[in-house]
Image (cartoon, rainbow, N blue to C red):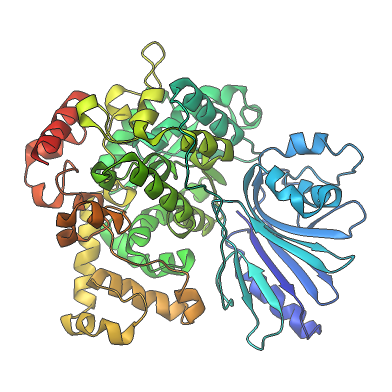
Length: 562
């Protein structure tokens, strides 16, 4: 990931103003520690902090068209840049950067070129001939983009992080209606394999974040199968590196180790203590720029792991975000009453990814100059997965279908298995839970010591907007406000009740869950095998990592009770 900053319409074009823009851009250097660039045209500035992944030698930014009348600063990766270059035979390229194609596409097609890009990106393009500009990001918001205005009303500021901005904006690209296409497991499998292969495009060392859950395990399995045929193998070898973090003895580290052994990867297992996580909270909240409880819980171990990964010389990782939103993998989807509501909820979850999991994956890793790529959010894969009749995604224990069954089934290959059966059918475990259940318990205990009952009782007076309702949320909010005191930053953070990473739909689908509003997966009472009210039940806890048949039996019992 890189850091980008663009400023347009400056009334002050003095050296002091340039120095100020350099200083603002420097705040993003953690995202791009490899090189800095700045282009100035009259009252317009485009700045860049580079994390060199493709063409490290000559791909410094900002980038230009042939006569330098079009300037662009880009954060992200364009996976189909070679195909697009082939269509621009009359154009002369200066670098091997995948992002240079953006300037040439604009010259050839005007602003209509954005839909031609296949990748994750946010960019700002300046046409110096008429001083017009374009600011754009990928439809999901895998990479962040914020827009605001100078305090004196002069100048438009666009950048990859919030500092110094007065407002934020986003765009979405997911349709709420589905096409009811038939479910073909081989088509779904092929689309995902293609998505992973695209993301092997790199000129630097890389690996896969492996939690041992379904999604990251599938990413690792597919990458491991196809790495030997990728160009990256010529430079970095054909043995995949995988990375995992957790408290000692956590569910994720155990499962990840088993998957790594099965796939034959070079596995790196990191541990952290609850105190180390608590000590990092302020830095985490500063970098991820949110006070959302779920995001902070999950971002902290990811932030710590990214630091370890960078210390090994790795600059790019592939991760499993997005699958739960596309396939309804969160445990509250067990309560969806029909396929229409199921589909509508998945659409809403995908549209909000830029506020939650994409934000976490992008900013937790980029804090240490590491890029995270997410194949489940591939444009073609999303189009295929979201066009399937959602009846196939519904959780139906009576038919042997658990959460994300259509994805599990697509990779359930008896002749050439991708994963061990019990991993393929492992119950959904949120990252903040999987690193060790005592992690969340430790955070709550710490917050209880920092926030008094009186402070929480008066929270609505101190924080009238998006008022925290728990001591943990209050504690995170105080840290956030210290770094980002302006309302503009505050307004970009989502709010509302959540059960097991749900929207308000979970309570609407099952009113009994309103008594246990916590974003942890263990709040899914009657669904999670180690739910809060059942943590003393050894048999249920063991089922979480048990066989698919045992899990199915448990889900059938749950359905019978309901």
